Image 1: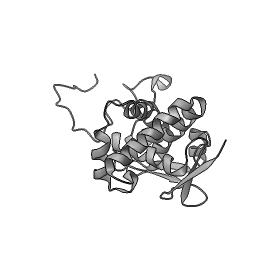
Image 2 (image 1 turned 90 degrees about the horizontal axis):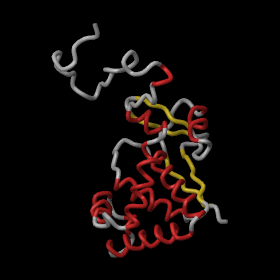
Image 3 (image 1 turned 135 degrees about the vertical axis):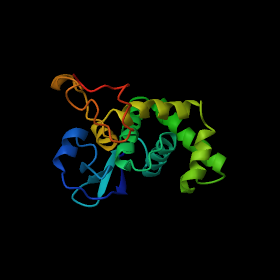
Image 4 (image 1 turned 120 degrees about the vertical axis):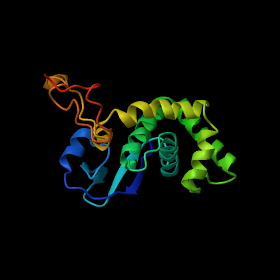
Length: 193
């Protein structure tokens, strides 16, 4: 099995321990939520993802497709890399997944008339949307829904505090602490009696 590393510069943040705990050592570094931004850090200013099936350029292409399908301007690439990690693991177990994704990346290059990954973001996104409904698009989209949004790094970025059942529920802990929505009318949400 070959091993490839994808490295991306990331801003530094203060705590490394929490990231290593939450990501099971997949990415080297840490997360922190500061000013609404998610940051990843390692002993250097980069994080790395080891791939067993895909090459570095294939991993980078899959990450860019994921970002085009689920665009979040301020979400760090380290979170998107979890999708690449899961697709790489799926391809290691089932060669047809690797073939599907490689063929999809080639299809993107064909539609771009060259190297799709080297295009600017909007040009890449426009080409990806043309593949909507294909097995390639659906495989990345389906994996992304879980890998991208069901992890504590994304939760920290979006302000989701996690499950509340073990702390008594949301009513007494954070029921109305959203700061990104306008306050509801008093009639729609009367104060607690």
